[in-house]
Each structure stands twice: as structure tokens, then as C-alpha cells.
Length: 59
Image (cartoon, rainbow, N blue to C red):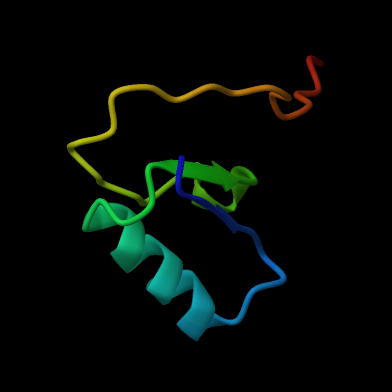
């Protein structure tokens, strides 16, 4: 399975490259941090697995 990663330590150019490849189907599995939790609209995504939800302070 073709895969790549997306995280905050990548340059903006590399992030755009990875997302373009994912949208075009060149990458089938995208592993990412919460960096991409908001703002991505990729209709062909069928499954999202969240392994470590963010901490929430309940006051």
C-alpha cells in the first residue's frame, strides 16, 4: 500500500505535495497528526481512525 505522512515538521511545500498525491490517489494511506484534523475536505476518504484524541480539560 502506498503511504506517506503529514505533520507539522514538514515544509509547506512538502505538505502540499503529500496532499496533492493523496487527492490524486497516488497515496492510499495517509498517516497524520492532528495538524490535519481541521480544514481538509477530501470527499473520497472512506475511513478516519483517531488513535489519540486530544486532551480536554473538563472544568
